[in-house]
Picture 1 (cartoon, helix red, strand yellow):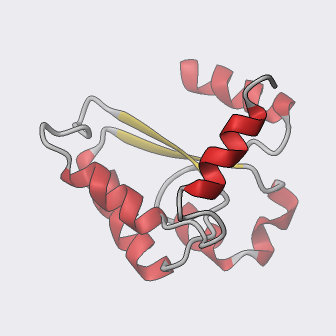
Picture 2 (cartoon, rainbow, N blue to C red):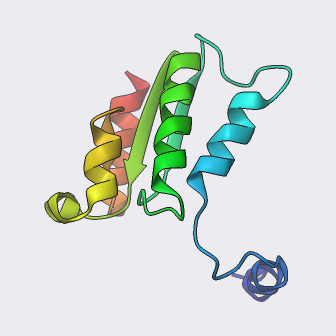
Length: 116
């Protein structure tokens, strides 16, 4: 909490605050990283609500990340009972496993599940 004001300032000064999430670009950059960050031995954990500024680009990049990785798992902070109303969640859950983590209890359960 001591650094919260500094963090808020950093985010606001970044020039990207308020412009939306660009999951496609983030995944593309990760997939293109040299030396490769994603290998068949890697597990990629994505923590996101799936809402992104360019859904088709994000879907293509997610499929590429899945191809390169041993495993891709999506941790979603939106409560699971609302997933049926969010098209991007439905689309991405069709490609990779999606785990609800809308509460600390769910996040802890997801971590335990991933550890096994």
